[in-house]
Length: 237
Length: 237
DNA sequence: CAGTGGTCTAGACCACTGG
DNA sequence: CAGTGGTCTAGACCACTGG
Image (cartoon, rainbow over all chains, first blue to last red; front, side, top):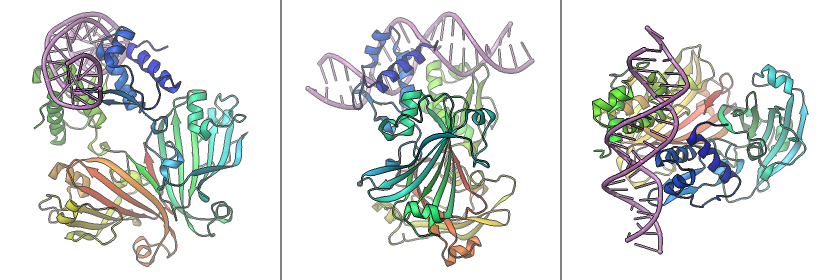
């Protein structure tokens, strides 16, 4: 286990947030309360809480206390990590996801768009294909690939709240640590045009993503094809 | 001025890094040295140094010291903030910039792609247009707009190292604090196709950027048109 | 080995939030 | 007004780096 005081306290409080013991909008116990609770000084508690701030779990307000943040606002400020709905430049309409290919285990494609290491090859590839819609408009065609790196039952159970990242986080304790993006503009081919309801030859935004995780040798790859005609793809940093 | 001890020390050390008194790769004085130098305790110095770590100026190595980082690696991990050359997915070929329209003061365009506030309108708009090339290949057509918010001599002098951001930072002490991106795929029109040497109707990546700065009411807007046929646009977070 | 940054204790004073 | 987080002092012990 962790042998540092502040790390132990940090993961302890984090677990309680994830478990829902402290809920979104709640005030955490004050720093002085925590001092008594864990029998440590305020500096140590402050180290734990500040780490939780930079991880995005809480926000501190002077004179008031530490507020528990929305779970979806966590992690990196990037495409799809935040969830599809926050990325599309319209938040009035409901967002729907249509699963085209359910998660299934197979071999990795030849000439995969990123380099795959030996461990990933041995573990095999789980892939799934989803169509993201705003109202009735199909907007994004997403194919996701990840290695089957000790993820029992992954293909059998549905995602928590329909979210891949939430499922990985809660069910398998996997967190995203880093992201690489690769952007291109392309013309729609026959198949993509069909899914996205655009004409063949329409311009599409093509994004390759590689997510690094807290689990060794587990990476997540996504290929996103976006129809940006009606909705653009936003991104704040 | 700043009235917090650790803030004053932080900006003091930062200035010395920017001024080149501490250079890239140098070890800063140790935390204990700084304690004596500024007559404060180590906690205060550590607060200053940790702030500089998260601003990307230095890196701390246990048992060794604080290392001054490369100036270009600073600021946000995003497009063009890093400089064009780091963004394009090829670092073997030399990168060139052709200035199409030099910086010049004018009125803001009607129907500008972002909302402009009253202060920006009053100050007037400085705009410039540049073509970014890898070797001889034109890759990115960039039009930049900023309000003339107390930037004397901006249109007359050339940029430091050809970089807008470096010039703003060193000459005017303006730093980028936040970025918003908006991505689209479009088809090349006549004019853009000419500059980028592609056929009319070729797919282009269109990026709108809004940079927030440390100076009140000063924002920087960029419109980027990218030919991603040969070079894709990369992005690490 | 001396020197470094990382962790932790035990205090103090302050400006700010909200009743 | 009592309680909060932000800043700051003055110490201590540790694991790690590099000669």
